[in-house]
Image 1 (tube, rainbow, N blue to C red):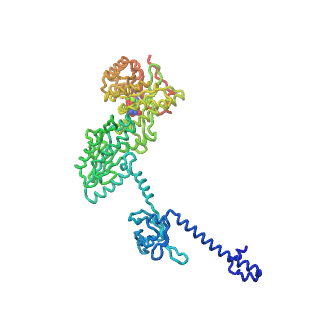
Image 2 (cartoon, rainbow, N blue to C red):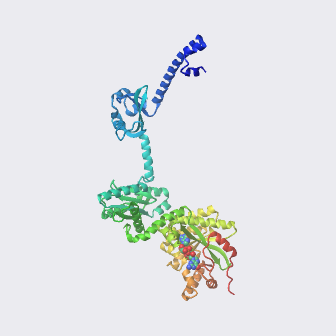
Image 3 (tube, helix red, strand yellow):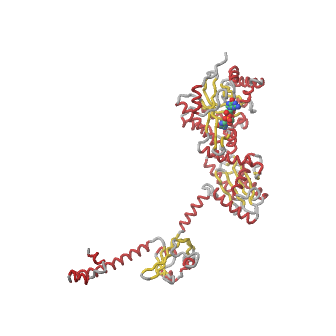
Length: 599
Ligand code: C2E
Ligand code: MG
Ligand code: MG
C-alpha cells in the first residue's frame, strides 16, 4: 500500500506530512533512505551476479571502449585468445580478430554489428588460428557507448561437423569416398575438363567371385579382402584421382582431366593386375579374386555425369559377361544394357520388398490319379517395367549375382506356402527351380535347411529342380551341393531333361531322384514318332535308374493318355492346369476331376 503511494509522483513526504502528520512523514523519509540503500545493495548484488554470469560463461565476452580497446574480458575470452587482461588491453582488435574492421565498417558488405553470429577466424597470442563465431553489439549503458563482443570457439563443433560430413561421404569399411562423393567429384571433374577442353575417364570395377569368398569364408574375410583391394586400388593412382566404393564389391575410379583413352586403358589394366595378386588373409590363407572393369570417356561417350556413369556400368556388365575383362563402352551394346541397368535396380527393390511372387502348376500323379505336387514358378511385375518374364529376370539375376537373394526369397515363400496348405488340409509337395549359379552357392543347403525349419516344413515336402545343363557345367561341384541337399531329405529332379548334354554316367553318380522330360518332346510325341521313342526310352531309362519320371508340357488329354500308357509317373502341363496363384490353386483343386484312364 505504502509502496504504491510512493510510486506516484504527486505523493511526496511533504504532502504526506500535510495529510498524516510529521511522525508518519519522518518514518517515510527514513524508509526512503533505507530503500535507496537497498536499491544500491540490490544493484551491487545484481552487478556481482552479472559479473559471475559473464565470468562463468563458456563463450568469451569482451567489452570495448569507443576506441575499440578492451575494457573488460571474461576468463573464457582470455583463454581463447591466450592473453592476460593487461596484454589484451594493449592490443588492437584486428590483432585477435582480423575481420574486425570489415565487421564494424557500417558501409562495408560484411558489416556485422547487431547482426548475430558470424563465422570467422581469431588469432591467439601465439599466432594460431582459432575457428570461431563472433557476435558484436553496440549498447548504450548509462549514456556510455559500449561495444560487446562475444567469441565462441567452434574448433570442436567444426571437427564434429567435419567428422559427420566425412561419415556421410565415405564408406565406413574402406574409408574410400562413397557414391555421393564420387558423383560430386565427377560433376566437378566434368566442369574442369570442359573448361580445359580435355578428356577424362571413369572406370567401374566389379570383383569377380567375391560373393563366393564372402559366402565360403565369411563376412569378416570378405571385409578384409575389400579393405586390401581398396588399398591396392589407391596405390597406382595420383592424388588427384578418386577411388570410391559404390557398395558391395563395386568400386569406381575417376581419372580427371587430361586422361586419354590409352592412358585410361593402361591404368585399368594396372588396377586389375593389382587386384589379381593373391590377397593374404592370414598366415595360411590367401584368396584370389578377379575383376571386371568398364570404362567410359568424357566427352566421347557422354558429357553428363549420370550418363557417363551408366556408360561405365554398361561397359562393366559387358566385361562381366565377355572374355575381355577391361571393356570400353560401346553404344551398340547399349540398348540391351540400358534395360539391364533398369532391371538390376528394379529387381533389387523387388527382392527387398518381397515383390517377386510364386505361382503353382499342379502335377498329376498318374498312379493315384490325383494332384500330389506342384511346381512353383516365379512371377514378377514391376510398376514401371511391367511383367518381366521369368526367363529374363532369372537369367539377369544370375548374371548380376542377385540370384542368391532371389532364390532364398523363393524358397522361403515356397516353404511358407507348404505350411499354410498343410494348415488348410492340403498335402502337396512343392518343387522349386534352382538356377545353375545356385550350384556354386555352398551356403545354400544350410540356408534351405534353416528356412524349412523356420517354416516347420519337413525337407521331404520340397523338391528341387535343376537343369541338366547346370550339372554339366561343373559336375564335381554340383555333386557336392546336391549330395548335401539330398542328405537333408530333399527330392532332386533333373529339369528339361533331353535338352542338355549330361552324360548318363554323370547322372548315375548324382543323388537325383526324378527326371523331368522337356516339354519339347512331349508336345510333338503324338505326331512325331522319334519324339515318342525318346519319351518312351527316357521313361525306361529313369525306371532303370530307380527314378520317377515327370513329363512337362502336356497340352492335351491325348498327351496324358499316351504318357499313362508309357507308365510315366507324373504329368504337368496346360492339359491339367496353367500355373495358378495360391488362392486360385485351392479353388481349382477343390473342383478338379482328373481324366479317367482310357478303358
Ligand atoms: P521350367 O522350370 O521348365 O518351367 C516350366 C515352364 O513351362 C513354365 O514357364 C511353365 O509355365 C511352362 N509350361 C508349363 N506347362 C506348359 C505347357 O503345357 N505348355 C507350354 N508351352 N508351357 C508350359 P515359365 O513359368 O515361363 O518358366 C520358364 C522357366 O523359367 C522355367 O522353366 C524355369 O527354368 C525358369 N523359372 C521359373 N521360375 C523359376 C524360379 O523360381 N527359379 C529359377 N531358378 N528358375 C525359374
Ligand atoms: Mg522347372
Ligand atoms: Mg522344365
